[in-house]
Structures are given as C-alpha cells and as structure tokens.
Amino acid sequence: MGIEYRGVICVGYDYDEAMEILNNTNYEGDLYDFCEELGITSYSPYFDAPYQDCIFGEEVESSDDYCFTNISNVDQKIEEAIEKLNKKLQVSIRAKAYLMAHGW
Image (cartoon, rainbow, N blue to C red; front, side, top):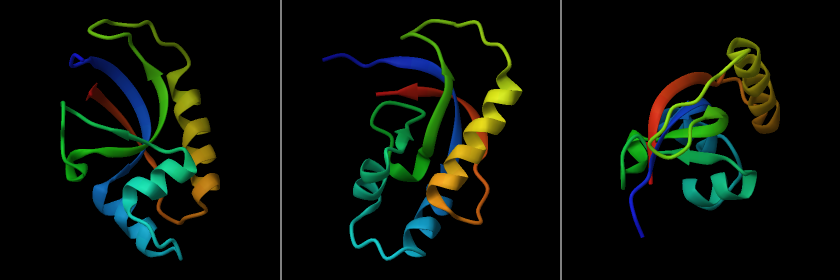
C-alpha cells in the first residue's frame, strides 16, 4: 500500500456545508454512510486528512498519480457537474468548484 496524490477539479461542499445538508435530511447514518449511499466522493487534500478538511462531491477532471493532465471545456463541465450534484441532493446550498490535490 502506498500513498497516492493527483490533481483534481471537483464540485461539491466543504465539511460544514455537507453536515448542514446531512442534518436537513431524515438520514439516520453518519456523513460517511450518507456519501457512500449517494455515490458522493470525499476529496482529501492530503493523506489521512480528517473529514473537516475534505470536500464532498463529484469529480470534473483529474490527473493520474503524481502527474499532470490536459483539460478542456472545464467551465462547461463544472457547471454541468454543479447542476447534476445539486439536482441529486435537492438542496438550496449551491455546490462550488475546487481545484486541489487529492491524497489517499
């Protein structure tokens, strides 16, 4: 097992927003189970980061491990991903776009 890092553009919610969304539902599990059930990924900015430092959402673009990648039409892809995620969760908190390292 090794540590991997990649660059990622994702759309989603920070920890406080994710908890607000969770608390406004009738879901009885924790944030991990909530995300797992909905197919939402937790993006960790560094290996073994606590949930308070993560972004919860969906990937728009990413690189390979320790690599770069070419991106195109990123503005359009971000808007489409935001709309898809907001529709999936049916919440009033609008997802935001994040450019970050993702370590696991």
